[in-house]
Image: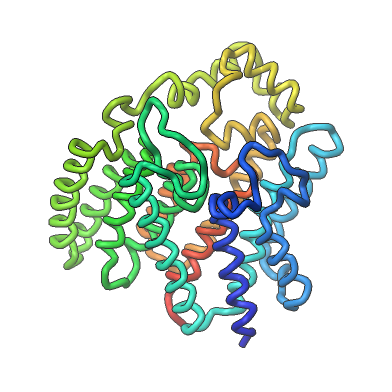
Length: 383
């Protein structure tokens, strides 16, 4: 059995990877500063690499992970050598670190470690959601200096931008729904309130639909919990409606709807690019200066592209983006082995659908996939 100290360091590294705003709050990172690679890399990555060197773990005994690392290596090398854009901080934190963490966990598949990881995860979940609610109540973000915009206040909590927070909380919520936790419905409801505080319209709309799908799943599988969950939906609907109407929680969805010029329209207008360029122009991606010209010509140069797949196509090209998609899907699918088909695809599709409505996976120092890996390990079937 591996050292418990190494395991604690692994858990610590995941929490640090996810808590970007906390690093901003303590002064390790400053908002708006473009750091060099080594200075700008999340410190958790160095901790993970330290464990790789001194922990004597087997990191190359999984074909899926090996292919994933190979694709990342070829992509990064090609873009660097050809003068195209590649964010190595994003590659290290967003892809390489989760793969290494997954390999670490394969050496700790014992009940005591799984229970320890679950306690850490649930503690983090409660703090993350609780802080989001607290920030919404007092109208102030604790770790970042962001004022409320014209579209209302948005909690930033621990993880990063509200979209990143909502994505990580959603990942944890999807695993919680299929767990054996005693208070899983209460924890799920806590996550729903937190998502209102993050004020992310697509995530709010998704969970309204997903909750009904989950209810029908319970009914059709004759699960005894369906009545309890149905009453929770009624109760939660009343409470959430009260919070929205009386206190403005999640007001962006009511006031702006699912479509607006500053956000949702960008996801549509980005396809105007193909009025001027063909798919052949994006086979291998483009340098940064060409991407800027394309966005300017399309008229969205001053707006943020809130879809990381589109960002990947522009930066890495269609070939590498397809390869990344296959690697990510295979990586997620491997972690879901042994689960019933509905559970498996509910969790995977929840992640893919919500993440595809924002650019969280394409920014530096994101712990999105690492969060998924921690959930996988914490909620796996006991051995």
